[in-house]
View 1 (cartoon, rainbow, N blue to C red):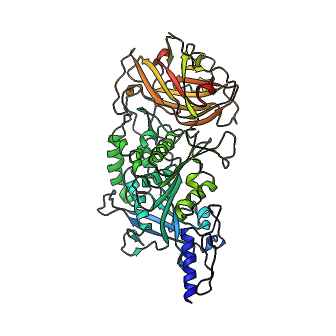
View 2: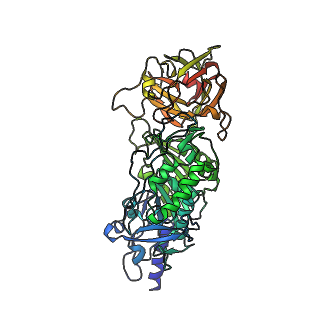
View 3: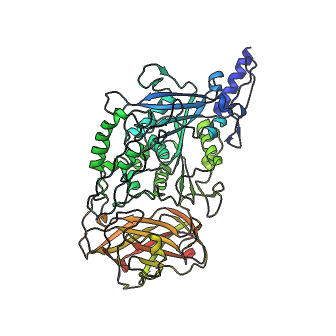
Length: 612
């Protein structure tokens, strides 16, 4: 009997520390179900795979914040889904944790919810419509996401509603400190450091006796932002995160180089709009939350008049706290995501990698969302949550889905940007109202060319027009060979405006434009960027432009990795207001571009030799 007990303990211990044993007979000759691994990946185990046998329950975890003004610490609503063996056989498993503000429903998209963007720059928009969310959902189930993927593979899946949403107390702050400390508290509870409660206001406690204390987080968009927020707290036990298209700076989400710029597809959205959209918490707390957060902190801080960076935005910039991240980071993003743009993933990945934390990045060519292939996610979580030495930390750092490839078949690269890429400097030659030249040769005294702002013309309209006074376009000769762009293009524009304020938009395009309705998403737009010329010196201090005076404005375009095919031309298009993204002032603002003081720096694999 003693030998049987010792054997059972060895098997269960092996499940936690990397042995690939699947079953063993213990003291009572009952079969024990434990995780199984093959080729460094957690396998689906039959004993974990029956959803009818899963244990599902909910609870509340107390935070250190009181953001809803009721005089008591906010409690977060948490739901657990775990294999029955965690109860019947004393099995402990690692946790995959997903937190979201969306689980309990969102506000309707009513007329006036978004800010009106039709006004002059520096002038206030008319007041927008404020809405209330009708809460949905039931106990004990917060969400069913991820459970079918991970529970059969030997994980426990935990969900929580973020502050001020669903049955979680507190107030949503859209990137505020409490939204990082809430998932931290849940992780502290999963690791046995703080108490959980069976009810929202009771004192009867519940423990996570089934947790190994190893936690991973994942999710897309806002659900991918919260793993980043939690990781910046440095919380012990958060071993790995896989954020998918996360916001890493809310300033970069709603502003661009000093310019008020909407996320793609949501013209006129701002931080207070998102607050209203997700505020599904208790109705009795909403008046206090609205007054304190939306109508005071946000109203005083978001600054749609100048778009400047300030303390309000600085508190919502997770890049500031990247040095605290200890969780192994596997980042995922789409190069054609114009909602949460690729600078968010790239800037965080670079900081975390430079700090020596295990890091990889997965990029696909599609739009918003898109997780890495299950094989790559599995290897990441298997290594850092189950402790299986599968060598994932020695893999190539970057996985990129090439144009027209299946998203499940990325190409491995040593890193991103491609280490073989170097910068190629391209200069402009006159003729931008039709098609000026873009080349590595600098022509002297090209002079200046002028465009007239008119937001009613879309970027596509401008790129496909044979000539236009509303944009300036400079193109390379037809490419004789494919060109592989990898990294962050940078543009410097020397310009003058006839008004104190103007929008500035730059697109990098592949021409001729593919006009087909089913054109691949990788055709046409290579990358783009926006800036406020008033912030030519500082993001935090804009200065009115002196009409006729030239200013040098330098800024990054969005990171990209794309192969431009032979026969195409690369075009640099400069215009003012972007119909899909910026404020829409009345037409007529003139921007004059000094061609001799303007250039593009393009990261090309193979450098100048490959480009030439």
